[in-house]
Amino acid sequence: MIILVGGLPGSGKTYFAKRLAAKMNAVRLSSDAVRKSLRANGKYKPEDRMLVYKDIARHAELFLIQSKKVIVDATFSRQDMRDLFISLAGKLSVPLHFIWVYATEELIKERLQHHREDSEADFSVYQKIRDQFEPLNIPYARIESTNDNIESMLKTAERFISGHEGR
Image (cartoon, rainbow, N blue to C red; front, side):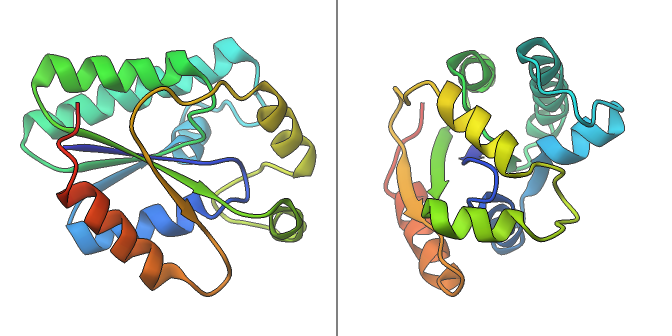
């Protein structure tokens, strides 16, 4: 199965995706890690971002062929980014689940003031991605991130995944 964990920078998606991957014994693929490996840090133009998503999809396919569960940790702010994985799930006949992680803008601003090992995004990147976000048009779970609710987030995700057929 593919689980897409989306959210704006600072939403808590990476913290959540790491814990969900550990709990589900899944491979986690991160847009931040792939961006670094492609030496694309600081490159946030649409075409640069799509190169990152295409590389993630290529890696995801290799793991899915090995019957591994894959969690993709990225913003998924545009439909064409989501479509890559919807198509991949269809091609391989595996379920796809989408989880949207969000936090209040006040909390995001606070989080983005601190150095984070996984991301270079600051509040201006958050604002740019937020303003360009394309609405979600697939079934998804919307899970709020606070600074102390990871266990309830994981339980909500597990209920969603087990009760949702995927695409």
